[in-house]
Length: 216
Image 1 (cartoon, rainbow, N blue to C red):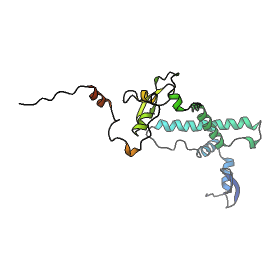
Image 2 (tube, one colour; image 1 turned 90 degrees about the vertical axis):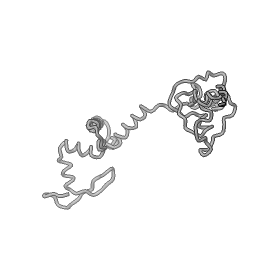
Image 3 (tube, rainbow, N blue to C red; image 1 turned 30 degrees about the horizontal axis):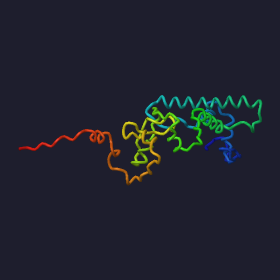
Image 4 (tube, rainbow, N blue to C red; image 1 turned 90 degrees about the horizontal axis):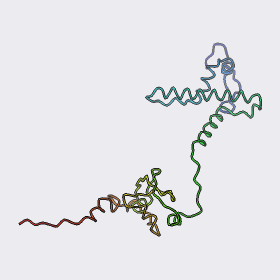
């Protein structure tokens, strides 16, 4: 710090909630600064728009969002100073943390309720209507067990809630019919090509072989 008015005396201030020694000119500046300088000082600790990008309006949006959060904190302090003690008021950092937590809790889906029935009993239960429905992009359970590959499937069971192939190896029917699922294969033991009997191989099995013709 360089000043033409102050000497090298210091005072005990706070930084991030901890006490530290600061030059006395910093105290005078913080006391007499304007609102714009104070806003820039507060926002400099949370630079949301510092990430570079090609779209200039994204940076402007982040700057406006950062300013809105800061203005919300000012309104929070003004509304709580009249009713609560200063010790019960959240800091700027805690205020932003509470905003992030509330947004996360608002948009995170609730955790699924675990059933007391085991998965093996559920998949072999004939009293339930196991129907293939379109859902999230999940890994096929049978392909991961038999071939040690991550085969993506958008079809899942309406009861078991697991991804299963329908058109490749008919994993959906096999998953709900076999008593014991095949053991999980190691990655080094998986086939080099294909899913075993793929669609083309099954088509070749059902077609009759063409007779051999000999040239005279």
